[in-house]
Image (cartoon, rainbow, N blue to C red):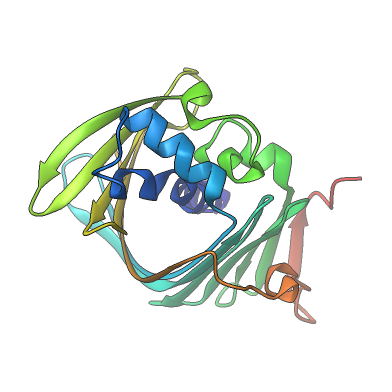
Length: 216
């Protein structure tokens, strides 16, 4: 169950890298554009459509919902279809709530998000310090940037970020087993006002709660 949580967190945080490629007319390398955008990003809100493909390219899972991100380290990844799941972090604690299973998985955010693209949401350091960042060309009107982790002990091999007409549109994450998670973003808002309560979570009465508590 929590592998999905880590994957969703990775996807969320990779958003922090994205729109640099949207600055296609800006001078400098892809890494410079990513770092420039990260320094300006404070919040993000969007809808999403997600599909997971196995190593053969067959679609194994489809989902959709909404997401919100706020530095430092806060996010809300809200799956609406085909079943309700909620991934929330207030910067200290990470919760995954599965409504169908009536279960909440809890972990300390720093442990769950260490060595993933999600760590970029902390606002500390530059993307180029943790990732090799390269231009990945243009296909079907989408400009792509490729991020490869510098450390070899992460759960993913690469993150690809896609932009159209200056806006975030797609993201692809390839894990160590060859499974690919693809996300298409809609109605993207950069730096909107977001209420603090959006990133709070209290387990509903009667659900099972498993995992560690909040960081001290």
